[in-house]
Amino acid sequence: VQLQASGGGLVQAGGSLRLSCAASGGSFLSVAVGWFRQAPGKEREFVATISWSGGIIYYQDSVKGRFTISRDNAKNTVYLQMNSLKPEDTAVYYCAATLYYSNNYGRDDERQYDYWGQGTQVTVSS
Image 1: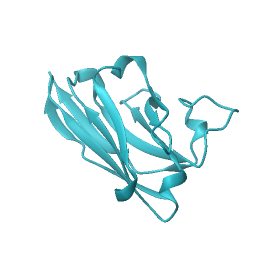
Image 2: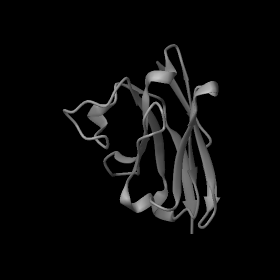
Image 3: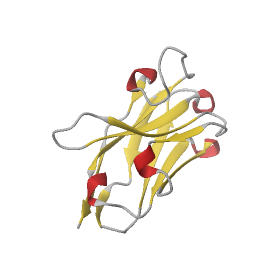
Image 4: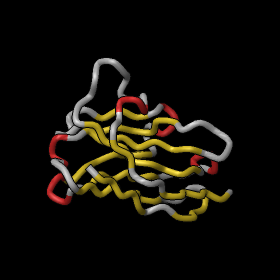
């Protein structure tokens, strides 16, 4: 599975962006997808994840109520709608996929995910 993240950019605090993660080269219908982010000088952290059916959705506490993850399996794409953006949301955002959620790791653990896309930069100005 190859993943391509897009949709990043520069936005003022309080604004919105929608990130897209387009998949190719595999059965997108069977993969769970997660979004992670990495701010300068910080470790990569979990943002949100969605199961293949959309029946399981999980967010990091700091983005709950502001970010929404969704998927369109007909378009092989997962979205991350980001509203009420804050300067602390500034980071490179990555999407990642796994064929199934393993019981060995939490759904917010990057070791859960086998396939990674390149990042897309999100910058929120104050």
